[in-house]
Amino acid sequence: MLIMSKHLRTDEVYVLKIGGSVLTEKGKERKARKSAIKRISEAIALALAHSSRKNLILVHGAGSYGHPQAKVYLESGEVKDALITHESAKELNRMVISSLMEFGPRAMPIHPLSGVVSKGPEIKYKIKEQIELALKAGIIPVLHGDVILDEKEGFRILSGDQLVVYAAKELKASKVGVGTDVDGVLNDNGAVIRRITPPEADKMSIKGSEHVDVTGGMKEKVYLLARLASQHNIPSILFNASKESNVYKFLTDDENLFGTVISV
Ligand code: IPE
Image 1: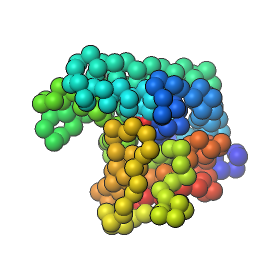
Image 2: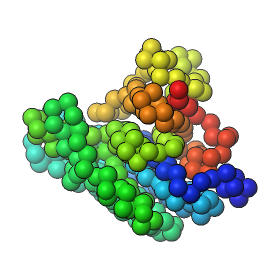
Image 3: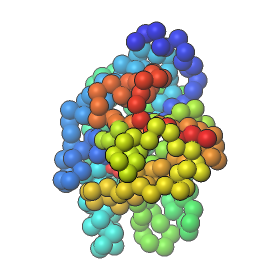
């Protein structure tokens, strides 16, 4: 394990997203997978301790703490339902942060509702300095899928994947990892596609999620990550974060990490 830390540079920024399907039971409502939260926090703590990596931005999805609630909001348009979505996403965020802190790393929340707005087709992020200062202070900023204010609609949903792309771009990440509960992007025969280039991503047809998913599932992920690769030359890997040691492998640059690489 320690042998790999030789290759690591300390100033690089890594962005890691853990999907709501890993941290929660997505078919239910407000049901966390406590053991997964614990296992992933421990893997992050170990990877940071075993390497000299300092700059990690963590993003998590909302899973059953966001999708069912957001669906209610999208149907009702009521402010109270938007706030229920926000509060429950925050609840999951608190669990993730407490768990990380229990294993050692210092972490803090950055809630998109308080720092991101949507104006017309544009999303305006006002959280760059917070992320930067947190990293400088040796704290892991932990962002999450959330509701944000929208100029016309009242609120709209901002996915963890959109935050990943934003953070990677703004903080000039060298690597992005997106952990879900599947091994990567699957082809029609159910086999993992090991690499996707942006032109290939444009031509692909990808199946949607079987659960309530208000943010587009795997298809949207591939689209967003392909643009991150083509426009900013930042590679990403989609891997299974429900599998033991994959998060550790991602953070320590283990070449055996199995998944789908999206790169130019
Ligand atoms: C969803 O964020 C945000 C809300 C529904 C409020 P994500 O789209 O990143 O969540 P997961 O990873 O699919 O659960």
